[in-house]
Image (tube, rainbow, N blue to C red):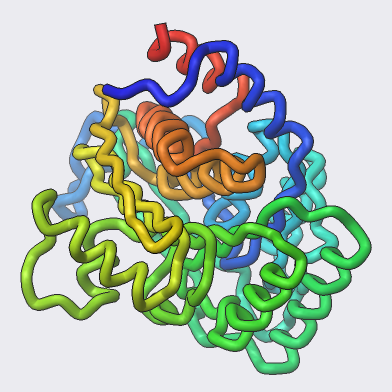
Length: 338
């Protein structure tokens, strides 16, 4: 695999991450876990019985992007909504424990805090229960979110913006259009982890990161996308969105990134690093977090894809949604760059 950094450059880049303030716009949520042991089947139904050993809650969705940024030394600023409920209180408490600002979080009485309950037995996810609404927030709430975005950019340095879209109703076409307009005005790079509802609304962003399935569905293609026709599909998407970079995550095949500069497109296919995969939950959050930090520090497409690919694979070795930490990423970089 091509190495896009020297060990010294990698260390310097990780240090630069620590001075970045990144705005995270999207659907925050709470990830609630029950960990336990399974050694029998229920007599009531053909399902395993999980003997509970531990209960825990973690920041999820767009908040996991903020958590990844925080773990890499950067300062995240979240713009989102949660419910005025017990889960919302738990969400705020977790943020405060970690030292992550909640000043950009709007609490609503008519929406639940999105919560994903996962039951893990013998280190394997056995069940997930989602408590949520996917209805778009009212226009008045979008206005409040836009005011938060404008005020923060006007009053404080923001070095990058990431849209983490989980289709839970926070992000609307108008929010996207206005935020990108503000970002272009202030020369702030914008990265996007999209979902289908607003896939084609993210015009003129710096980096757009779909997976292979999202790429095919977003372009309404009737044929399958493979490695041979992937550059053609990405070029079509870049043309439609006017995106500077498109990075497609390919699961066990790695990532493909294509950058358009001066009318010319250049692509890099980076194979995945070999891993003992335990759980892919949250890998996309890690990839977009690292990619946004690379944009904020003005890295090229190759470095962006290399670091994002490496970090995304690392978190797949852990059970549950976990962030990638700066020290661990540094040690892994030194190992693979030898």
